[in-house]
Image 1 (cartoon, helix red, strand yellow):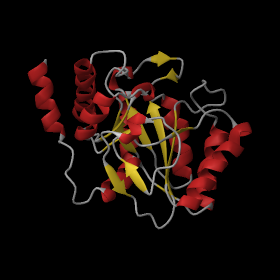
Image 2 (tube, rainbow, N blue to C red):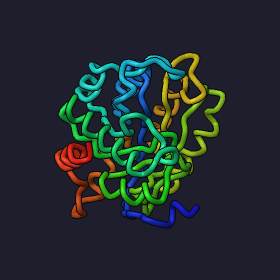
Image 3 (tube, rainbow, N blue to C red):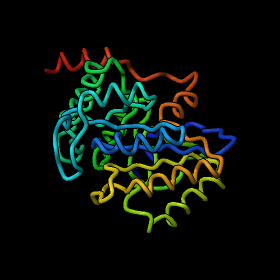
Image 4 (tube, one colour):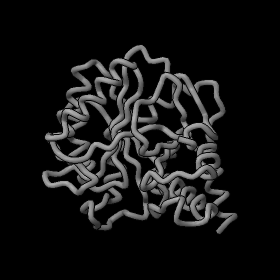
Length: 254
């Protein structure tokens, strides 16, 4: 895949044991009220990639997050990460429009919560060469939806991630990924959207999420939010520009 070989920012994970992160995109309320509760009951935390323009809306994923959910999940120790403002694809608009929406999303998160969301995921998993190069330079990490295990050398400009969709009838295929990561001592990232008994095609049931999280804990994985993985491996490397930089750029452009 050409995207994997250009504009890379490779770091060594150096894991002594396998790592896994559980991520929720957009995010529907059930990702936090149900999914977050499952993680917390098992003593771990996740990463929520939020597109602020979806707040208080309702769509095919169900009711979207509310403002109070943002402060609550941060208080619970989960990570709040960036997913643009409008949930726009970098392939559907000119790059400058996409870049401004990324900037607007990060600024909005900080304005509402005081938290600078320095990790990012591409809406729809759509990535372009231009976006990977430019957005990657401004974030601690950028996550796609290309499957597989990260490591031992990992591209922070395009983290690999695996969809966690459906019900427990798909458990075996997800268990296989866990086994691969156990053998490689790499970093496995799962992502989903809504978490409910009858999920959308882009969500999962509570039973599936609980079984996969429990499995990784039984296998001795470190279960960490994305920021707790990317932070240590970037020690001594240039850090992404802070919120104030993006806020100033946004004021100039608008």
